[in-house]
Length: 203
Image (tube, rainbow, N blue to C red; front, side):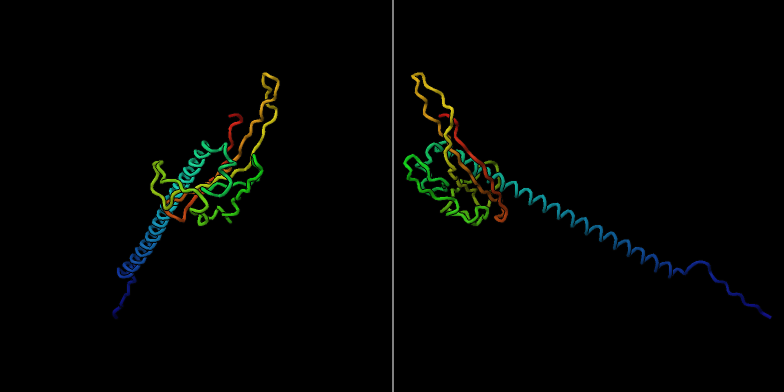
């Protein structure tokens, strides 16, 4: 009588090994692809953020250049609000009717600006354009602009007495507000700065 023995291998077939290896390789490839895409997306986002930050800085420097131009104007004209700020010409406004003759009928900023925080509201008719910025900045989409508002006069008390016994004439101090806007290379990116200016207490 012949006896036949069947021996079952304890090792998987070569074909099955190849199939498992292929699946593992595909999973590893998929994971690597996801990591690569995520890394590229992160790099792109960082690049965009850096670019936006640069544009914001450009617009801020441009706005500051506009503000400096307004200060230069006031350095020459701050003591003449009653002759310079009678209308809104050249971006000059006033929120007070008091003047030496009592005749000043000023134009307020609200007359020409519904909202000066709106970049589209700044035009040649209601603001002053500053020549191309020369502060070592890249070119911008638009030149900066500024407006100046005369806020009023403060008369200082406790004035000194002159040698002949007469009280010296009170020293008027003129107060102004400056608003300036600057754009980046992208016209959709802009900055607005605001500052106050007052004349010296004696002149």
